[in-house]
Length: 400
Picture: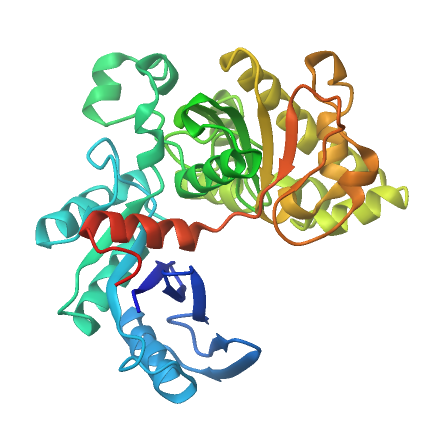
């Protein structure tokens, strides 16, 4: 067996998957939530079996100990399914990390030094790395960076029109995010269509509570909607996406908002939540269908921004071969896909209404037979991509 443990450590959660890479089969997965709170929730899945309990989880070290207890009690045993490498999702790699990287003390220090560029993510990611290296001290650990896929952006696409001296001093530029998903989905689309990956022009739409678009030309990211942080770009569940920066000055001067107030407002209290009272697209869509005016307007704003980026990336790619939808909303919302692609027939984008409404597992095509641009729904799998890249970095083959 060639087993990889994939870890995604958040500020108050720890997600994990144990994957047998010879056939990319998930042996077990789990989620440990509410780390540091009075009562945490622990879930462990193995096949059709699911174990769940509540208990206090003090920190990420405690969470890793609980994960190991889950494997010991509910399987598979680490003696039978011993991982050869641990792969870690790290959000921000700056311009230092261009691919999967074996973690040592220097890499840990670099991840820590990049925390100011992703304060909500890199700190918790690093806590997970340190906890995992304590538990799995004798096998390699690999960092897979969300930003790495976007290091192919040109300077024109990644620089803001900000005073260059200030921008360089404080490392202000577009880094993007969701790169692991964009890479996985664009590759999966090429394989599904039996087309060479290095020849395909793909618009990937990773649409969930967090959302981003990416233009992928021949396997390289040439533009993406998230910026220096994951706040820029599309309207999201609780984030504004693109907004005039002067709005912040206005709210500070007129309403007395502090920097922390503005951070909270733009990241956690806006987006669909701020427009409609809920960040769940399913609820917004149902309410809009029932005649709720606020929900309808929120959905229109959400889709308007999405169409803006789709059009922009069709221009950037000089036409696309594929539009690929992924993420919780992208994979499941018939209404969002229909509204976002409406009226694009003149661009060669023809959505088939019946195929769009059909639901089934796996990759599926939802464009008409005559559409010049193929439209796909591609369930993303960031964990598999992290596992693949972790093996690549260590040189361990998928089957031994």
